[in-house]
Length: 267
Image 1 (cartoon, rainbow, N blue to C red):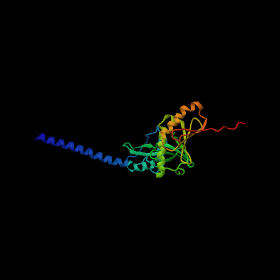
Image 2: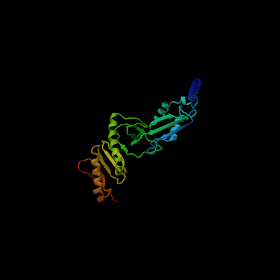
Image 3: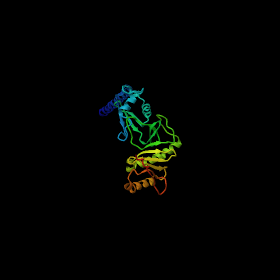
Image 4: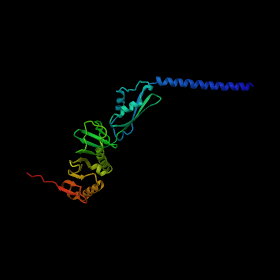
């Protein structure tokens, strides 16, 4: 009988100890939510090896110089969503992910936009990413992607960012595919310095070697036209050199039409 009583007392004491533990733990946890403050901000640029449009210091400054500054603030008063929206307004940032840990550290993961094309117009320069989002050039970093100049078939305002209309998007789709073809070929990506859009919409290419104009035509038969140009380089250039012709025209089927340079008048 005594053993049973002692057993009951033992179980009662164990239950009381656990109950007291959970009670005080929950009290401390509840107090911590209101009393703990943010002590640091740690920023990770997830794709910093490919592009460096923003730095960790810049991201910290964007937060600290805004009304959403977090250092010293109670964790319960920090709005993570608002901080993400603040950072996402920076045009070179594709999206951000913000979180808090138990030590009061705000973690910020940044994914930058990946430009595939650069458009240079009278109003300034712009990058275009894979989603057709257009954003201005950044003074602190240059991404080496194909540069397009000339008669761009849509208007860009100074400092513009965002998306173009449907017609502009169709043209950008063709141009991005064209740029991706060039980027995917080691020789052409090293040779082509500039893509120029003529008044009639035709594409002209300017190369790093030789001062002739490569008249490419439209976006049709891209691979075929580049194979024609490659054959020209392999079979004609070794005989006549790089600078004999002023224009190399790839627009016509089954042929390459070349225009001789005009000789300068000798004095």
